[in-house]
Image (cartoon, rainbow over all chains, first blue to last red; front, side, top):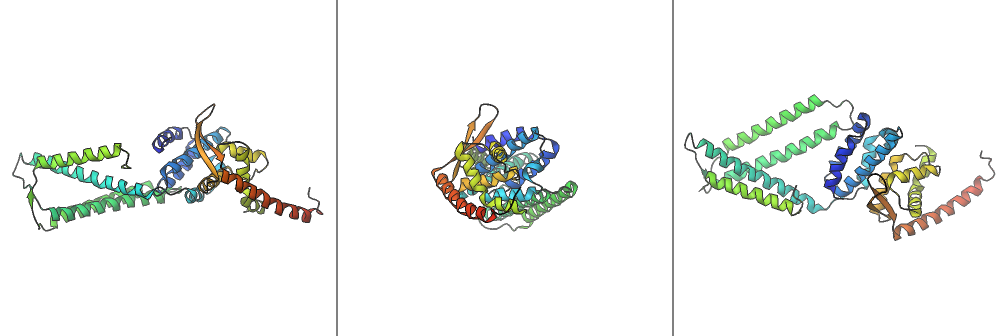
Length: 226
Length: 110
């Protein structure tokens, strides 16, 4: 059974847990899944075994605490330590997929934005590739930082009974506003320099569209794109 | 950690291998069998890190299989390497347990 199916099955079976057991198990699940360097298949298999075990134990009136101990974090660490690492190449296509996806949507949004605004006023379609590259790198860095930051917030909220959801939400909003501010600031103030070319809304839309198709095909052909 | 669980920790790999050698089992079954033979202070969850480690070292192999009732289960089988390892563990255990038993023989343990 593929990891994807296991995840699907896990989602359904988890609903059968009592609220208390579900909380305990879900924290462990997220904590283990956050370790992207581990083999996904093996991780999902052991998570499914533990869930099946917990469900059977639940029938006998046992709690997750009875089965996995009073220290879920230590137990999960023990599992993580013994799980095999995933293949390194899995991470690279994954990152490429994110970058390509981001690029295609930016082209598409740019195309639509120019098309719409050109109805009301003249729009400059000249592109400065070097300037755009700088802005793109900044956006990419912001996205990766944000993802990392969200991972950290989640990790800290696990196994923590008095985790503060409101505070986490505030942190998240501040982070989002901050990165948005940085991106807008950089795109406004980066000087326009280097070679230029015209890039019409149609060309932009087509480039973005074909990139999206490429990402889609690569994902279908199972090279590890997510 | 109690003395008993410390003693147990060292030999638990061998116990797990021995259960799997008799017949392939899945996780829940394995913990049940360990408890049935009297190793009741093994907390049930501890078998999972052990199963992962034994798999990683090639001593056992897990295979997803449908069971007569209920969902697919991951059954564990002993590999050739696992059999050899179990032979070694059993031999070493014997070499410890006999001298220790003779040392403790005089005592009246209820």
